[in-house]
Length: 449
Image (tube, rainbow, N blue to C red; front, top):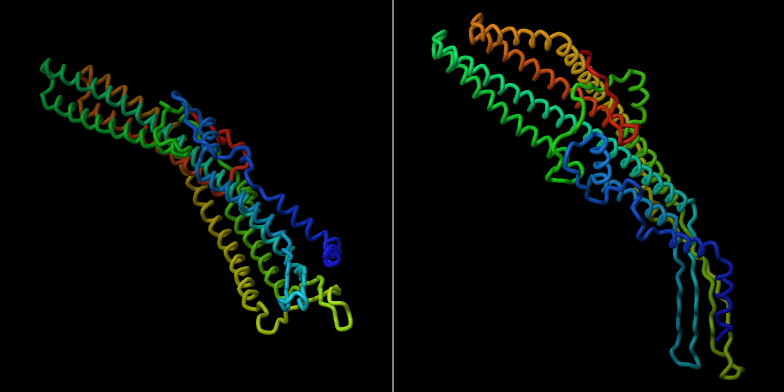
């Protein structure tokens, strides 16, 4: 029987590249790799106490569930690239003719499919483009999470300032109420003035409760970015009057070409092109080479115990008569053109969104600077003068109340402008992608005092 397997050994020695590459590809499949650095694979809990922007961004980058999902997708595409480079498996065929021992014919054959037309190369290229897309999606997700964290952080910071403003407003309203009560007791004004003061104080207390609720909601939204439903930090630590820097038109134009959405659309065009090349390659039929041995019974005139071994060679070639893969090629080409149209649409939409976000940032920037430079000082001076004059009996309560409301409205508008500026800057970072360090705060500029 040993002579029966000699041709098979020859075949195994003659085709080492296929088997060796299959073994190498199998050995390269990742089974239980450790997650790369920065993987969002663990829950974090922020320390109790003040929270800085750097710490918030770092925790979001480490534990955001969406970032972990994008990372797993990238790891999956690595396995797809390995699988795309695998060679077809050989097949072993055993055939017996006539079950009677003396008349039995045994055929043992090993067949190896051989891909032609560059199918394997095209398959690997398509898998690599999908891997590039996953890597780009991960980078875009990082920029999106960073922008969301910065925006949520400044929302908390602004909510803290609004709460402080509401608390100051309550204190000032209490002072005005006591002053009105003293004047009523002294007989200088009618009791109606005290009633008006108490009504105004009640309205400000309602604003205080609303500010407390807004702060709680903002804290929860910030902590949710690193998967913590119950935030432990007491407050965020930062300068509320720091405005994001205005990017120049040249900087925005240079970042538009490499924005995450455009980069994804461009990679989709490359992937569709690779898939179209793969479908073209599949129009070329593959061949199957066979090598084996056949053991036949002895012919007439030979002894009954003697048998003869014969080498069997084979070549199998499909005939592309009915299926020429024409439909798949047409589909792949149409999807490639669709990807190009999607790229053009993404570039157009990105330009519109960036222009709108830039305009919102400029408008909020100008509003905050104007309020800080012109409106706030005047409102504070008018309020102090009206309050002092009311205590001395020179102004009525309505005049003092009007000055107080004006000051608080200007402060509220100022905080709203700051919040709008940071939201617009975060939107720009999300659209254009942030190339900076993920743990450093965004570029800011102080408001002119």
